[in-house]
Image (cartoon, rainbow, N blue to C red):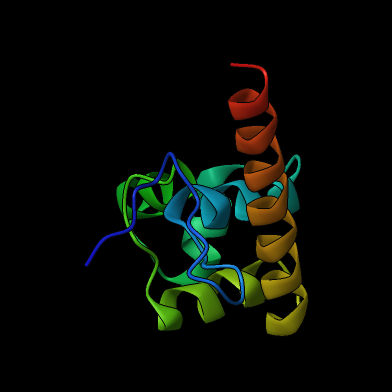
Length: 100
């Protein structure tokens, strides 16, 4: 089941990782490196990588590991970045909701 890439969800427990949060974390970590270069290093088709980064395609665990390696980022650090992006999305959603 695909999560809604626009709206992070909380299931009464830990934050659930959304496609958009994963993409945002990858994009922020990529910095100035070209998408094509990261895709090449990760062994992914550029189109696939680009869709993952835009949150339009779920990222498989094996792809996340490859992308983290391509970005010289430990997997646990990548997960931390993703969790931070989920928290930011939830805070923004909560603020929008409270502002009507």
